Length: 501
Ligand code: AMP
Image 1: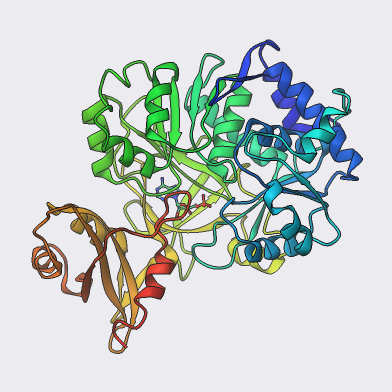
Image 2: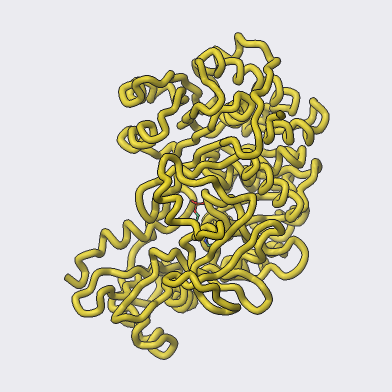
């Protein structure tokens, strides 16, 4: 048996002196360094008694070495478990107790605190510069390593869901889940060895780790690796990139910068957006400013990527495009599971080689989220239009039921966002004595805007049915977002929970 994902990476690797990662300080990691470095690290994992199937948790800053650690885990047959760098020790205690890693890799500053909550695990360090006790151990190891045999269904990673709608669950992703999706996306988006990807995403999430990094690896391409999103660095490196992947907030921030011009983006091949809703307005503004239609795609931790707008053909603002070639996608009635036709809103369900193996040590939850015929219930609400484009109208848990009527927040948000003087909005359901839930809008205004709650309501009155109109409009300086730019509606619901009490 082979080692499924790493074999695919080996097979597509270009010449050993070709660049894989160029760091922010211009130091280069070649494909040769990738094989040697991941071999040394895999030997270090073996020294630390990491066996195939063991979990290796990593809460480390973004570095090329952190990517090598991911690759070393693949080669050793271990299950890579990246953790958001923002998690506190209390949060980490939950993940560590749940996943029972054999090894935890962390920043040197956290070593003692993590040792206190991870009894039984080995603890090693890697810092933001890619140095630490794990790297010192790896330096002393040979490059050559016999990759652990791994089949398509063996686990490559566990990624905890971001938990914006409840407690985080560990999504088990197999070698074939990751390899198949990266191959599909590479072809759909036409990545080749000539591509240079501007990488400004975090690497503890599916977007920066699997979508970006695995595609680059399978195409034999290279990436310009930024420690974090920073417009100055983006504009400095853009002339040398061919492609960029980002969350919508990246594109919104770049649009606020006068350096974003047609010339600055002229040589780029593609700008890809995902992980949170992209406003149709941002899509249009981006086209007008750069001449490039943003390419929006949709996916989630559990499923990898499900849909994408086309590379050639209409990239329709406000849609996430077509189901990817090997993904079956349907819309079902959330209550009965009946399959709905075009233009009907329901829950999005998907099936394909991209869909995860279930939640770690949680067979009940896994069973609840799959239909008997194997479709995964994403929890996202959406529709397929007559041209076959998928639209997302929000998370199922964000659906508002007021006086017995369903209100889709996105519909109300789109009307508010279209008003002159509004930056963005979030519409939530808040417990209400009479209606069950009261539609509530939290709105961010442009500086100097003359709008207020009353004026916004007045503008909506002629555009939305009465039951959809917000019971309150709250003006706020900004919306709470997580690291991937997703609006944290759970926090907004908490803040305003007594509004109608
Ligand atoms: P995560 O598991 O953290 O990647 O979050 C996945 C969720 O992000 C999905 O279930 C969607 O609710 C949302 N999401 C991802 N991509 C998009 C997109 N292009 N448009 C709207 N929502 C998206």
